[in-house]
Amino acid sequence: MSSSGTVHIVDDDEAVRDSLQALLEAKKYAARTYPNAEAFLAAHSAAPAGCAIVDVRMPGMDGITLLNRLRERGTALPVIVVTGHGDIPLAVQAMKAGASDFVEKPYSNETIIDAVQRALAAAPAEAAGDSPAEIAARIAALTPRERDVMDQLVIGNPNKIIAFELKISPRTVEIHRANLMKKMQADSLSHLVRMVLAVKAR
Image (cartoon, rainbow, N blue to C red; front, side, top):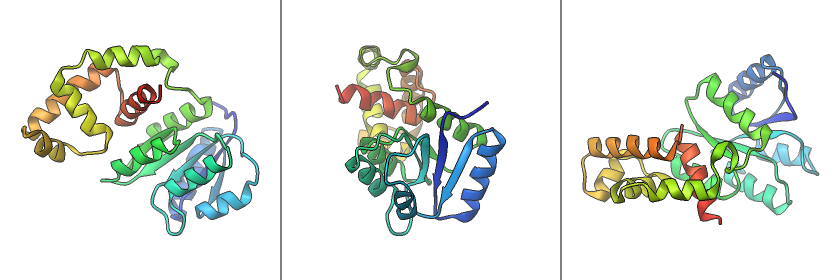
């Protein structure tokens, strides 16, 4: 495996930066680390090559603000946002701000490497058969209740909140969620969000 660009790691946690850099370099990726968003922006007056892994919650400039700054610069750098438990609404907000993907903590090595591979390939939502027309057809095949659950998932609500909002049991939410993920051919929540946002962006 080899990289097609540098993976820029932006995280205020030194241990996280070091472990990610070691993992990526072991997989033959070039990796650079930055202790905060300001340091990353200062190091790159022009658009950097590769992709970035950015923690959504950092002291000072957070991941969302960093994404907005990159957009203001016209930088199309693929950004993977890393979120903690309960930060899915922030992750969805980040994707609307231009993030290419999000990964929830704690994540496996395989999950983060897969996200990096997608980001470096700069694969649009249309890749792997996910054209907007096909995504729209999958959405149309959902039952009304599956669509309700999907809409709640995409705005970042967890199962318990979805159950409360839709006045159904958490177990019923789990069943609908499993069914809609299968029908949508989504292998993760971030994949589902990317597909739905791709259709809404049309």
